[in-house]
Image (cartoon, rainbow, N blue to C red):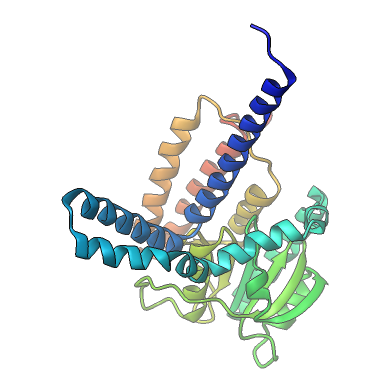
Length: 310
């Protein structure tokens, strides 16, 4: 069968159309997946659509009429509800220079991690409260706007100075983009979860920002001096050496390809997370054991299930 150029162009347009729609759907699913609050809103929209379908099938005209009115204004409602996420997506599209600015070498990340861990260790000993967030793939520009803008290299001395009690910037969060401090004294929305009473405002803010973004947030407790990390709505305590390994695994060691060890890793991660939740309320003597277990699983996953040197 012979194809003309017209037929070929139609096929190309069809394939391109499918890829563009797939890309939009994929981007939307990523936004929903990484934001627990957005998931709840999305579920509500799905429920309304299902009720609409039931009303049409059963001939419930009054209910159908009310839902039609709601759906007619649904576009405006979606724009209002998803305004932060939509704005973040448009900013990523518009800021083409961000792609090049975030190209940070491994050595720069290692130096930044060393300085950050040294600062946290020093503040832990002095029981100086601190809240530090490291931006990942999702932009924190909206939260940077709430603080005092900076463009400084990460150094232990600077971080200790910022969080020194009595300084203008100590009450709030430091946000790190790449290997630079983007701002200080930033405000995060607190979580709505019921956390134990031992956790204060900094921990609630850390869990809150980790629920709606993929950032890594470090907290130094002003009461106990303990160092905790909030990722995806979960709090975990670390000692300085454990914090260094965690940040190295997250920021420096590249992701490996899928291997046959993935089912084992998933089981190990599930076990370590369950163990973390149980140990969280136990005495501090169990902390070293839990931290080591979590670090071993993280390191194992990043090496594709191979031991060092093998």
